[in-house]
Image (cartoon, rainbow, N blue to C red; front, side, top):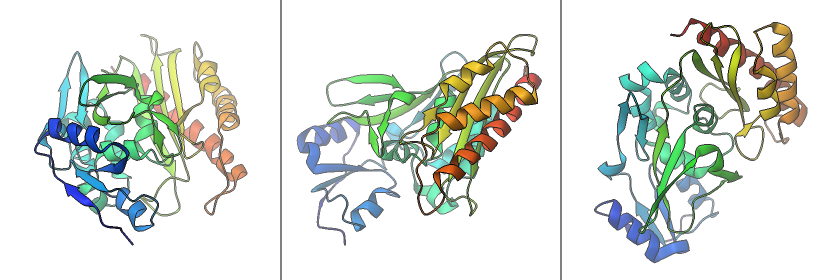
Length: 292
């Protein structure tokens, strides 16, 4: 049962940050509420104040610049990202990710900022945004700061947001030439949360032969979206071969930190990491070869 709370609807971002500063650990931010309301019903969180930012137009936008890249406001819905022609042109992996995220009803109301701030290690956007080298902008009433999104996630449902801070924006740099990013997840029921997911990014040299940069990010395989950094380094300077991908995907499975639950054993999750890593890397490599 949800306990009584005071509902606050700030008139703008400035007032929302003032509320956060004033009520500190007594309040929670609500965007779409797709995750928060479940926690409140279960009695896991019981805020005295609920600050609703869903209606703040200041945080609802999708902008692209050929030099600065993509900027997405925190209250932008998953559905808006999914249907964005700008994103489809420049970052199609985000479209694919969103199309497989929960139901249309959830995507219509849930926000990208809320998803990231919830910090569920099985969430879809985190691994993809880390693979894309995204940065997040956060603020309190006195200052703004940015940090790489891979530093944003600290532990299960825990982020680097400090007291009084709000996630404002996701920034994604322009994709380098000969680069492609692919996302795959395994689940039993379509659009359900991942049992395991992998995002892979490959950058090739100007001739499209050797790998110059790689990112492999594992989802639902550790307390946070986890880069398999040793596996990544095995790709740099190499040409694509099945043998190489077998070695890299095996290393990624060894770097994973899965836990057993009602959905899968630790061993099965490691196996899935190995299978999905090879698949995503191979697809990303082929796309990078074909890109401009």
